[in-house]
Length: 187
Image 1: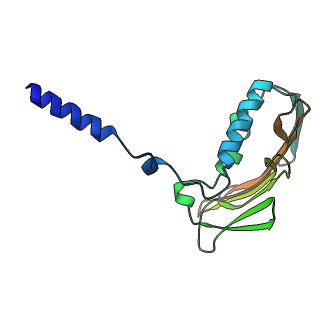
Image 2 (image 1 turned 120 degrees about the vertical axis):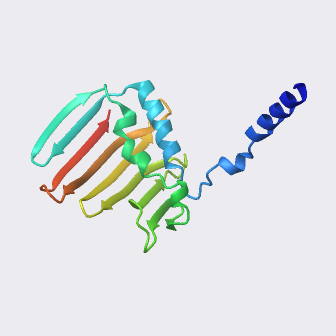
């Protein structure tokens, strides 16, 4: 019985050991998700005042607030990250300048992120501009979302989001097309 317990413990121990390279996703593209996660953490900590403009079709709303769920607010930027297992090798990479990276979905691919552009600050090497185009289409539904995020060095020495904007539409085949936009400016 003791030998059985010993062997069982060894099997469990060695069975639970995995090589870290087996579970790590190779990052072929800029780590947008990691960058946005850091921004969410910093924004949650600072709770900055935000001028926010929203529209849905013809209805518009403006408000100034520091009560924002940043994880939800920047969710689409996280979704635009290309370092997902299914996305590997699906994008062409071009570099028009030394600080600009453009990722474009290859012909024949059907992933929702059609393009992603990252412009890095020359000094900090942090993104000062992020632009993405997300599109989905099937028989029942189509949508498009254009994302833009700008960042800058704050007076207190922290690299932080300055503006973010999401424009787009959603269209169900049984309803009219709904356009929307959200724009936030952080004070």
